[in-house]
Length: 308
Image (tube, rainbow, N blue to C red):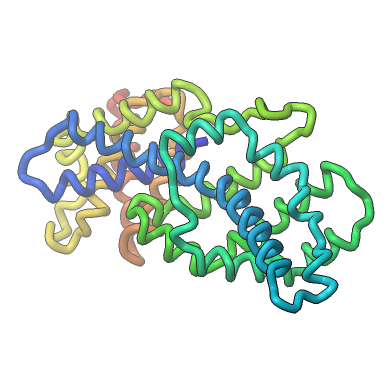
């Protein structure tokens, strides 16, 4: 689930934090990197559990309406289709989700007002109205409701972003990426898989974890070598005019270019230019692109890099 886009962002953030300190502790930096990636994976499970929490909130709403002194006919006989949703029932019993939430609990009930407001938005949505009017009782429609709800309502809820940012600084940059993986997970659910439906692993395979650790280590251990290369092509710039984030991004890009022969240079350049657009100054992307292009040309001429 943790893809290389997110890994690169995390390495940039960790290295930027290291650049603010006089001494660099490699082991501490690696621990920080893996912890931040773990927090991203936490968010994936918390999003999944949010759909269960919303269903539970509806159950409480139904019970409260039945307990009125003068309940209406609708209060006494509410629509319970949402409570009987087969997808949510399967998700609730998922072995992996259940274990994860016991090990790393997140208390959505602390945000009761947010949950109530989000539930009301769902109940008033076109997606929900179409769902309850559909007389067919099948797993696909149950799953499709939550796919639409998550994509159209939950993912667009500004208050959700505020809550998550307050809960963890690591989630500021994760939300949209993790939301895409939640949607992918919903789509992959099959009724026949029951409680053992597979959820996305933290890393697609061990190579992605190794990529994260190696990228950080190479960036830190070869800092002086990369800094010398960068200085050579920025000698017409006053050092204080170059954003520290730009220096960090170029340092990591060079580490990737020189340490990962299977990754095309164009892929690396495009990835870090995108990072610069999001995390540095308005002119950083073109500046970084120009400097790295010049460095890569030199490295190729000296046969220090032999790849496209």
